[in-house]
Image (tube, rainbow, N blue to C red; front, side, top):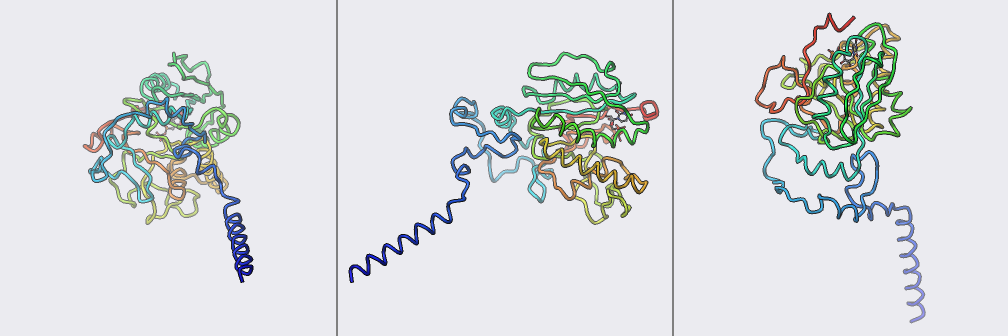
Length: 344
Ligand code: UDP
């Protein structure tokens, strides 16, 4: 009898062991041993060691406790229905974010195009970026131009450098603005993928007036257009022709995003620019162009590939829209331009 029990117990234990082995053999144990903040939005996937963590000021950084029962802003939406944060003044702690991005050694690229007469904007753009853009972080400017000698040689702060990339301009201004998607996409795969973790893509006729830092960074982000933040869907100037690749029906659309500022990890910006360029090419084959060119295709992309972070209109302000109370800081502002003078 005792022998029977022994055989039964041995069989049961063997079954238990093989069951456990079968279910645990393929488990990614790295997930459980790595430090939990290693992957999200780093762009580099590097693991932060406990040694480095102890050296970091974040280790004993003291700050006000977040209060779960108190919203940082009650006058504006601070997260989308798909739970992406919307960055407004007062919604983040820059000290914490700076430390997180320093620990990861984030390398941030900024692309800007100055073709033909838009060279008039580049000096102010770069000088103001040196003052306000990603202060204290590693920054690499990529200035795409048809006239290398027209780009000023400005003094850059430590950890920051600039590359001037010669390109041939297109004749029509619409082609210049739209082809940026293709040029950014191709330069990412040729070079940027090895040089930066994040890429921020900006228009040239902008001036930095206040801080813009790592609070903007995430997998893929867009900026809410300052002219449409209180508007209904039907007021959005999306492409409404259903035969265009930029088409958005009147009962769809979350926000109206500006085409002058977008970004994310280089991998995500590659996907975004590739989509927009292909959509443009699809329309070009039909001899059409979406209403607001690259901006229309960008809005189409963001409708079906939701941004993981949104920037409030503080990040692309235009004084034409005055000074609404909810906009506490005008961080990046459109430089007024004489369209006839700058566009051929
Ligand atoms: N651009 C350029 N040269 C041109 C037209 C456009 O370099 O002749 C670039 C420049 O970076 C500019 C961006 O494309 O900021 C978008 O064009 P624009 O500012 O005219 O578009 P808007 O925002 O006024 O619709």
